[in-house]
Length: 130
Image (cartoon, rainbow, N blue to C red; front, side, top):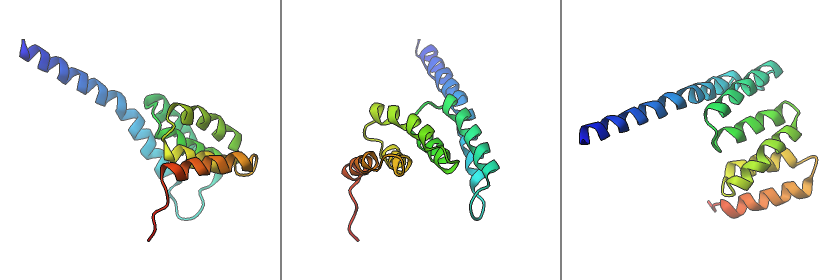
C-alpha cells in the first residue's frame, strides 16, 4: 500500500513540475528578450509581453503579473497594467511587487491612487535605514 501511495505522490509531483516548466521557460525567454544593454526596443518589449502572457497562462500566480504589467507600462499602456494589477492586489493584498507596479502604472493618470499604492507598499515593506 505504501508503494502505491509513494508512486501516486511521485506522479503528482512529476505532473506539477511538467506543468510549471512552460511558464518558467517563457519567463526566462521574456527576461532575455529585454535584457539588452540600454533601453529595449518596442519589438523586444512586445515579444517579452507575448512570452509573459504565455507564462501567465502556465503559472497563474502573483509573480508573473507585475512583470507583465511593468512591460505594459514600458509599452505605453499603463491602463492595461492597472487592469492586470487591480485584481491581483485584491487577491494578494501583501504582494509588495504588485503594489509597486501599480503605483508606477497609476503615476500619470491618477497621482492620488498612485500615492495610495505607494503608501500600501511602504506599509508592507518599510524602508530600511542604512
